[in-house]
Length: 292
Image (cartoon, rainbow, N blue to C red):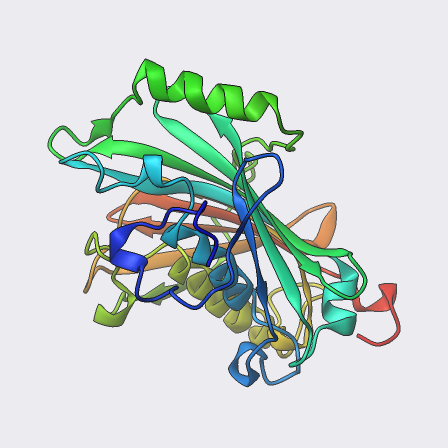
């Protein structure tokens, strides 16, 4: 393991054998995966969107340890939202033996937030198969308000950003569409879905929206996405976290399709009449390439 890469103490045992390498410009790191696992693939042979997100989640072990949520007593960092984009070649070519390089870089620093940009690159071709922009917000657990980073720390990372050419993305905002007639299902969070903050971990919401999409597609609610939702390949997902849910909460998840593109779906998760999660999920039109 490269000595230049610092790892938060609570994750050192978990990632001890990963060949982690710092990026050449000093911004972030990269490491190689030797292949995917059989349980990454769904019943139709495509990798589940949540599994893709999980590989990106490995960054929590060592992404910019100066930002570690436990480095400042009473302050933690939460995911505010993320945007994932998946290339056609990901669905066409990825298999159990595909070697992948995962690269992570800081892409933005704000008053109390920071964003990262990550890519999954196929080692053989050098092609980026998937990418994600993810934004975190630092929160004071006593006041439940955003906690600003120190001026010194922000300047330090602004200097780091000045040496890198990293793309950025805007936070997702649900379009002002009438979803009162959307398809809805009711889901209840389980104990195994809780994280260290004792609330539903952010990747589980991908399970919730794909479950809702699966039920809607099976019922014939969508105009193009029908039958088994696993037969369709995800092109992109955009999310925004607005609140929390915990074990036993009753969540109403609603979905509807974009009026101008039936392969674009919108979702809202509601708890006690409040929106706690917004998302957009876009699927590839299977007619766009022959092997899907």
